[in-house]
Image (cartoon, rainbow, N blue to C red):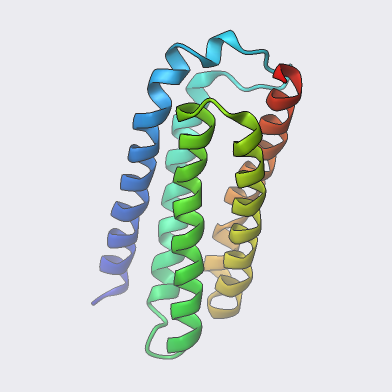
Length: 158
């Protein structure tokens, strides 16, 4: 399988996860989310979809680049992709906890675990393919911001 096919498969997986999270998110963004207190640095709602789409593309390219090294570093690649799938699953779960259950505190605990899993994925990816590791940095930065935003929303609405 070529590198491009691997990246394309990773992209489909990432976008499906993102879309599934949006199904849970969308109703709350229209009903519950506007009613809660948000910090002054809360971005406008329209920014989230393009940012997440861009991040899912970067994540997919990173995963595809790592997957492409499977013949050279089989065990390391399997572990790295395992962490990738764990963090991707946690990414979707956060939307369910925050928007589906409307539980910022539980979502805050989960996003801390998500951040750690992204960081571990970054550490594993960078050892296999430096570019793949670097491609996760914007994702790690955005989730760091999202964690601060999540914490602020929890604090303001407790």
